[in-house]
Amino acid sequence: MSTLVWVDGEVRTEAEARVAALDHGVTVGDGVFETCKVQDGQVFALTRHLWRLARSAARLGLTLPEDSLIRAAADRTVRAGDPSPLARLRITVTSGPGPLGSDRGGSPATLIVAISPARPWPTTIRAVTVPWRRNEHSAVAGVKTTSYAENVVALQAAHDADAHEALLANTAGNLCEGTGSNVLLVRQGRLLTPPLRSGCLAGITRELFLEWAAADGLAVEECDVPLAWLGDAEDVLLTSSTRDVQPVSSVDGRDLPGSEIGREAVEVFARHARESCDP
Image 1 (cartoon, rainbow, N blue to C red):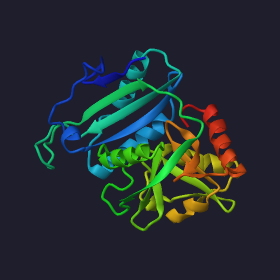
Image 2: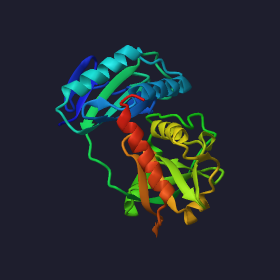
Image 3: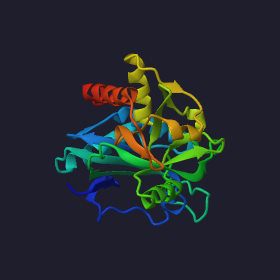
Image 4: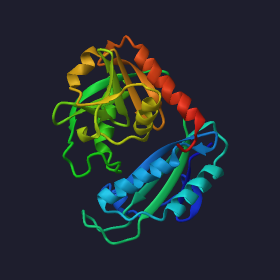
């Protein structure tokens, strides 16, 4: 399966797809996006992703294309691809072509939908903390914007340290999130996760996990988590749309012992996810 891109009403190959050179998504990162997991031709939790896309667009003052158009573009893109057990679908909306600078030009939004094959994540991964801080007071805190350079730098630092993901604190010194993930940790027998006020993204997998854990009687506390607590956590788990709930084997080189609560968290999400494609 090769990468395919829906743009301007047509599904094209990656080489054929084009957007304007002065699109504000290119020049200033003025856009929002969602990444969805596609399993056996089915987009997981598409409705929730579109709800979050709308929330992000509203925060930026962007007018989205009609929901029906986005869904139709996603459907056509998925169906145009070769069958693949696992794929990644990305929906991007920018403010369209604009002037050089931060002012918008009043152009219609640009909609891009792309699909590419994906590989399953490893069973466990290594994570490291990085020195940069998320600004929980930022105008775009918690918004899934296309301005991702901060994440690129942090993730490269993790790769340079032979790790798979970087974990960031916020300006208060509390754990916030990974570059593309939310964080759960088990400490002193408690399953914890940073609250949205920490500045973390309101992850779809995070949202579903909290709902499903509550339904199954698995207690999860949303609370401020000092970054230092990673130093004696029994378990750290990452959640994201492509990784589901994924155990971390080590943080900053310290091997994690693991816990029964962590194993239960992984199982709870996997079991509920099997029951519904669009929960």
